[in-house]
Image (tube, rainbow over all chains, first blue to last red; front, side):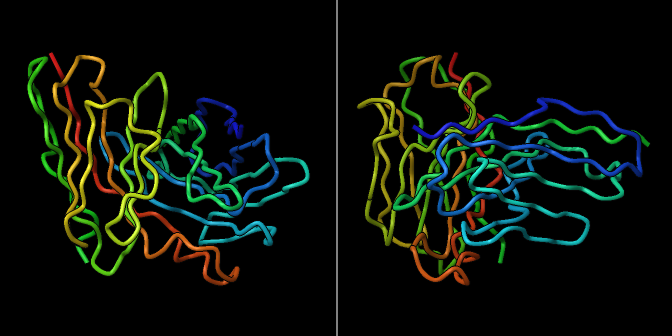
Length: 112
Length: 122
């Protein structure tokens, strides 16, 4: 059974700092891995999707990497801003399945 | 496009009452998902529709929960009778497809979420 874990559960950093959020999964037979952002009281917004055949994806200040062999994905946020404050969730989609298995999220606070 | 639209945004009801949550997916999307989010269990998939047909409802908690998708632009999630433990935020999401095509088509698998319905059962 796939389990997705995110560390740390919460993170507080000063504005301008580069940071890394971690996501680990127990079963390497994933089809893709997705990173989402959730603002309080809002739905999820897709940030990046990495196919299993890819190593990384970039969008603006965000870079997500995927290492299937080690069961890890990281989300790198460059030059963090207060507007980046939100909960970040990763979700693994397994081979031959449409289900997303979500981690519990990392709650990020970027202090001005 | 307005995105995935859910209604109501908030619902407060008494135990035993029927609750109906509504979802309008993004036009042209053929996959629709209902999720439930709680502090204890995080985000869980309840049911998945493809081309209006329920493909997997194994995540539906029990017979009190039912979901329908009468056409490509509308879906409902009904709880009857509701119980306090059903209190949660319910999300609807849609995607263009959920296939297993070439790597380049991965973006079509991206799920777009609605703002959710916060349900409180007293």
